[in-house]
Length: 486
Image (cartoon, rainbow, N blue to C red; front, side, top):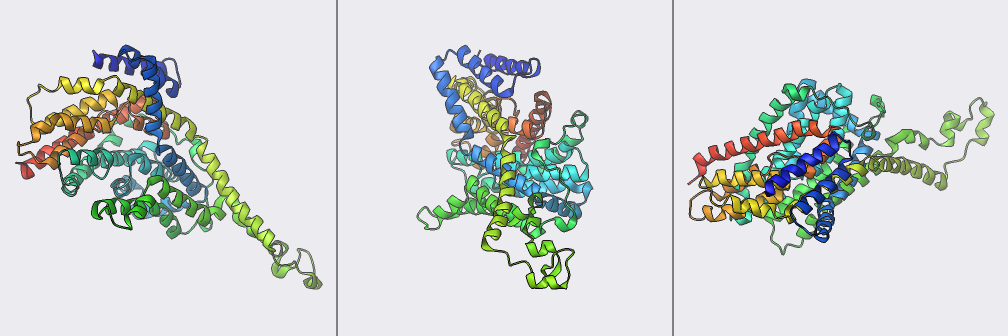
C-alpha cells in the first residue's frame, strides 16, 4: 500500500505539471500533501515535514546556488567564460569537447558536491554551446553525468562517507576501488547517452536569462591565467579541506581554517570577490570609463580640435574623487551582473525547496521503514541485496542519503562474519542510491531547470541515465569482488 501511494503521488505530480501546466513549485506541495493525508499524517505533521524539508534541502544550497550563479554571470559578462571556452576548444578540438567535459567534471566532481560542480560548470557549458553551435545536451549531459557519478559513488561525498563508518570500511580503499568503477561507468554513459535517438530528438535551447549576448573580440578578453585562477580557487580550497579532514588530527591548529575556507559557500564567495576585483573592468564596457579627461581630449592632454597653445591649459590630473567614481563604476557593473544572475534563480530555488518538502513528507510517512521490513526476508548476495534496497529507497523517497543510510542498516547484519569486503558493500549501496532520479529528487529539478527541459524530457533523460549508471556500478562492484572479495 505505501508504494502504491508513492506511485499515485508521482502520477498526480506529472498530471498537474504536464496536463494542467501547474508550476512545479505548487505541484510538488500538492503531491506532498496528498502523500501525507493518504498515509494518515496529521495536518500539523504534514506542515512541519514540509517546512523542515524546505529548510533542510536549501540550507547552504541557497548560498551555493546564489554565489555560483553570480560567479557564473560575472565570468560570462567579463568574457572569462569565452576565454576559457576558446582555450578548451583549441586544446581538445570541437570533436573532443565531450572528452574535455568528462575530464573537467571528473577533477571537479571528486571533491565537489553535484550541485556545486553543476553550478560552477554550467556557464562554461552554455558558452561552449553558443560559441561552437553545438546542441546543449551534447555538452551538458557529459558534465552532469560525470558529476552525478562522482557524487554518488565516492567519498568524501556525504552518502559514501556516511556508510563507510557503518560498515567500518576504509575511506582510502573505498576511493581506490570506487574510482575506476566510477570513471568507467561515467565514460560509457557519457559516450552512449547523448548519441541515443530519443535523446538527440530533444533539443532544448540555452536559457537566455542565464547567458550574456555579448561576443568579445580577442583583444577584449581577459588573460587565460586570470580566468583559470578564479575558476580553480574554489576547487583548490574544497579539495584542500577534504584532504585535511582525512589526514589531519582533530587537534591540528590549521584544520579549522582549512575546513572554514573549504566550505562550498565560502570558497565560491572568495572566487566571486576575486572575479569582481580582477574582471569587473571588463563588464559592460566599463573599462573605457577609466579614460581620463586628458585621454578623452587627445594626445598630450590637448583638447580635440585645439592647437599647440592649448598645452598651457592641459587637462588637470585625475583627482582621487574621479578615480573613486571610476572604481565605483567598475564594481557597479559587476554588481549589476550579480543582480541579473539571481533573478532567474528564484524559481529554481523554489522548485528545489519544494522537492525537499516532498521528500521529507515521504520520509515522515514511513515509506523507508516499510521498505526495510519488506526486504528483510530476501535471501540473495549481500552486495546485490544492498544495491536493490538502495534502489527501492531511492525511487520511493528520492533522497540518496536516506537510501544509503537505511540500506546499510538493513544489510549490516548480513555482512558481519560473511567475509564480504566492507568497501565493496559501501560501493554497492552508493551505486544503488543513484538509480532512477525522478520528481521526488531535488537534483532532478536542478538538472531540468538549468538544461531547460520539460518534466517528461527530464524523466526520459535523467531517470534513464541514472538507472543505467546504477546498473553499471553494480556490475563493476561484482567484478571487483572477484579480485578483492572474500
